[in-house]
Image (tube, rainbow, N blue to C red; front, side, top):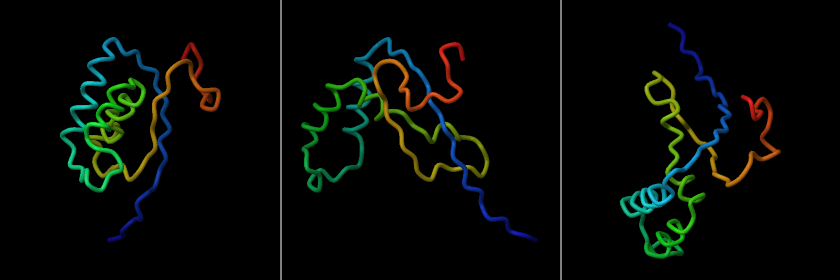
Length: 104
């Protein structure tokens, strides 16, 4: 029986979203922050400061609630090891355009 080395792949993704209820997004982000298992004594901010900062920014809140592990959920033998994601307001970044035009 041969054991194959696991394949390490990169999945590149850019999506455009429309937020119809910004308050729902920021409320969810703040709620998830409050429920997170964080040692606030070891953090530079207090929970209240972090919640206020998060709740004041739709962009930061959206990035906080995005869950990249859901992209591969249910695919046998696939797990997210690490990643980087963020949200930006406005039109698509010219730095991330390959294969993604206004019509597609």
